[in-house]
Structure formats: C-alpha cells, structure tokens
Image (cartoon, rainbow, N blue to C red):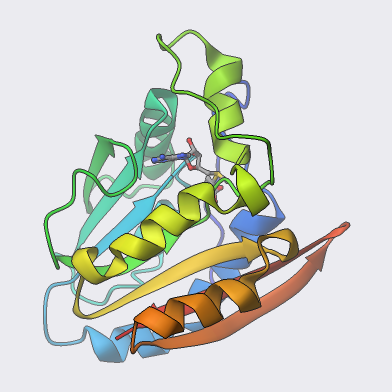
Length: 221
Ligand SMILES: C[S@@+](CC[C@H](N)C(=O)[O-])C[C@H]1O[C@@H](n2cnc3c(N)ncnc32)[C@H](O)[C@@H]1O
C-alpha cells in the first residue's frame, strides 16, 4: 500500500482532504502500473486542477506515479491559499526535488494545448443555486472555501466546462481522472459526453461515503 502524504494546513482557507480526496488516491494507486507502462519511455506532464491542500499532487510525486524522474507536476487552483498549501505539503513530504509548479488560474485557462498527459480533478461537485463569484481579496477566506464545494446546477457547472476542454488540454495519449458524486448524475454525463466524443470512458472506482456515493471515471481518446 502506498503511503498517504502528511498534510497540515489551515482548513479555514483550503479544502480539508476528505473521502473524495482519498478515493482519488486509491484510484491512482490502482492505476500506478498502467501509468508506469504508458509513460515509461518519455517525460510526462501531470496536472491537478483544484489542488487544495496538495495531497493528491504530493501523492503523485512521493510515490513516483509518473515513472520518469524529470516528470513535471502542475498544480492549478483558483484559491491562492491552496497554492501555498500545495507547496507546503510537497515540502513537508520531502518532495522539493520534484518538478512542481503551482499556478493560480481558473480551471485550464493557463494550460497550453495538448500538453497534459495525466489530468486529475476533484471538482466542486455539490449542487447549488449557482457557483460563487471569485472573492475580491485573499482575506475573504470563507468565500474561497465555498468555491471548493459549490458546483452550481447538478453540481456540474464547473466539471462541464472542464469536460468540454479535455480535447484541447490532453496530449494524444493523455488520460483524465475526474470525480463525481451521485447527484452529478455521472452516467448521464458520460452518455452525453460520448455523443460528441469518440473516447473511452471507464468507471474506475465507486464508493459510498456517508450519504454520498462518489465515483471516479477515466477519459481517454
Ligand atoms: C473539492 S476541492 C479538492 C481539493 C483537493 N484536490 C483534494 O482532493 O483534496 C476542489 C478544489 O478546486 C478548486 N477550484 C474550484 N473552482 C476552481 C476553478 N474554477 N479553477 C481552479 N480551481 C478551482 C478549489 O479552490 C478547491 O481547492
């Protein structure tokens, strides 16, 4: 069993790792051999959208989920506190020698076309009337935290934007791992995605977490 990174953050400012985060870690552990084979002979670029505390990105680096020493890890979050937390978590787990860059950005807007080999997203998936606006300053910490959770209609407002961008972001043999909750209606989302994309979409993990049912799907061309 691969070790889980040690995380010590201010959870008034960044999302505290929870069942959804741990489901992603379990999924990446199961995918380890597949990813090792897929990217054994070239440098790969991993990008976590919404890195929060940095637990997932650190897990990737700590356990060398991407086989090449010089693989690149990008951690994107809209919340500035999350970027600091991601760097701290990497350091706390002795990953400072890995190639890690953190980027404050709205989803994928800062990513170049077709460069990402492994994309991971544990999105704000809780259904809500709307997605909160971006706070005007770093100090509006409650509002940054709301952005971690509230996903608008069916909890899918943010994930739908990313799904529409997968074609642009992923490298030709890239893979995306995306987490859903049952209220996102993932089977319907996948059906709709496949109407417009000739891709492979696989359910990799499904788990009851309290009253929520969480799942992780992979998306490849
Ligand atoms: C559910 S949390 C997941 C955090 C971490 N990946 C984990 O698994 O513990 C969602 C994260 O997405 C970030 N986020 C929300 N909307 C975003 C956006 N439009 N662009 C980038 N990051 C966003 C939040 O700030 C938050 O850190």
